[in-house]
Image 1: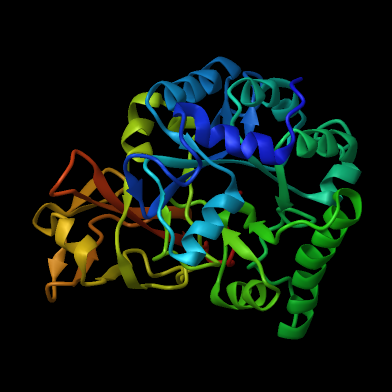
Image 2 (image 1 turned 90 degrees about the vertical axis):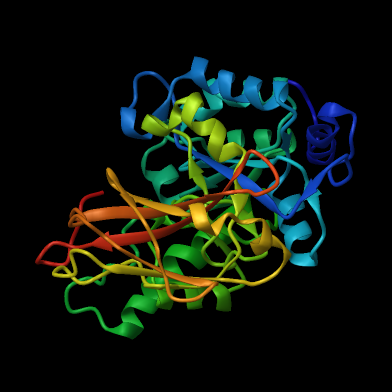
Length: 361
């Protein structure tokens, strides 16, 4: 494997077209974050991308002038209000599977693209060989990867155990998040506090804890990362399984962040009998909104195309036409740009439990 230190690789990603990471013709205020799991043709299809298709993704990014940047470069620019390079992309992997090391790392290094791997230390210990170990994580870290926190157990964190008090749940969260970070820091040196929610599941209580503990947290429903993103609900575009299709991924890679200032429901977890929750979204007035073709804004849930009901120039509601299934789902809203052939994108996550308060993985 190529021996590139992290600084070199981060810079190289921005120099793909002879430009520095944060200076090129054209700039933007958002970044598309891609989420992968397995890179293999022999693992569950729903969370996998085969190695050949993964290489095609990277080749497309390079051939079409995308700027793959380090996650910390993206964070610093967004936090400081600096402009990002046009067509900025961050690449992430959840779980740290061994097949990522075997089938993706060398390809990423060939393309000189930085990436982040979210890991579960307890699962690494219990299932040696299925996940990358600390030595492999040290190696890829030295070659430019960022290693981040996915919790100890990959459990459904927002589900309380039977008879569990609020205080006991908070202590369990402390174990799952804080001790995982301690294990990562102990084995790899002090790391930035990035956390990816297992299954993309969160609630306001967990968000508050992660904010208190100083983490940026990443979810699994779609949309670019921007100044309008909550620090504890940073959206990502899944790029595995049915989402690995490059033809449909292209529009997402070219998407822009919709300027959303408030939304309902804030909590993805809805009541079992709330089969058709109403989505309410408030947009922030300003230059960005002036470029959003709100007259052409549409939302999508399952196979339905939903027309918004506008309550004002900046606030709309969407009523679902079909019952949402038990488990995780999302409502995606898009609107074309008035100035270029791209779409503004926003997504609301939903989780509907069964009668016993559970749902599938």
